Image (tube, rainbow, N blue to C red; front, side):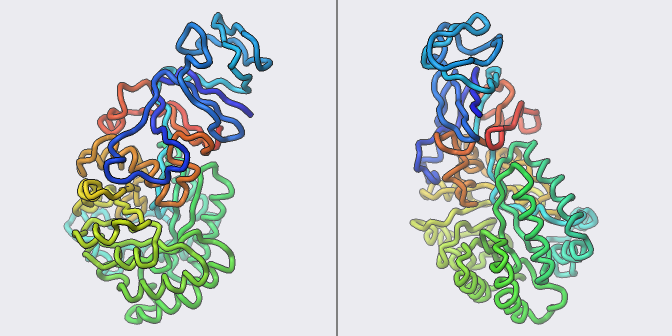
Length: 439
């Protein structure tokens, strides 16, 4: 199956092969090509360039009559002469002067959950903090109660509504965490649902085992025993079924300590499961340091960090990932993305889509918050929501940029004046078409 997208006003997010992430000043630029075409074969980007490479005498294939029947030779289609280099194609897509760009990648979500926590929304409005709600037995534990009483099929059906929602908003790859089970059986139930989403949805999915999201109700006052449960029962069961690409720990005030995190990640290493970390959302916790020690793929949240975190991340392979949707919803500080970039580090942005602290998976809004509240340029925010967040979920070798050989997960926009329009006019519909896996 070969597809040609033509009449592209601007092809945005072009990177050469082999670039896994962008760091520091590299994040300041987004390579673009105006008046372009792009070719997809069997779900992969195979070629792109100026439209004049394949069309004589016009900037597009407007008024095309039928696809070409054969390669080579000069062909007239709808009054337009196609040069001899123009290949045949099974499908032609007219971008109508819009942008074509890679789909967003969202490396931090919790979208497999039951029901919602809108009752806690009233508590937040009344002034209760995230920590206070959790201390009263709410928050994550409320979601665990709901999930326990929800069947696997129903959990899948609810999650797929959210998956289709984020696809429609331009996300083409998502990492989904467990962590609302907090028992062996319910954590496995969540991970099986995530596996089912991988198998049935066109979106690229990575699964993250987050048994150490909170201490289950049955282990209240016995946190060390719960850590043993995660290490000695949950991790072996998860590994035996091959359900997790990553393992995560909420290393923060009121949740899991550095020592407990170290123990869990050391155990995960025995099963060859790559670590990630929730850190520094509530306090400067030491989570970044223990994450880098274990070569974590990413350390996420980072609303509260110091120069020490910047220094330990410098030269590491760990992606600092910030979640501005959480800051927006909870009214807490935003991560110091600008400072990290000025220090020469890479930064990724993700949605943290979850029922308690960020009930939205709109990566366009994440990009806008990156600009409006974190003072990133549109180019920095774009790179943070595409190639760098693809790296943060381990898929930048196949997603996150316009690169030959990468999977054709693309957004075709309506005609827009600039890249900056996307975060600037952040509620104006801008997507004309989504392409996943070339379709």
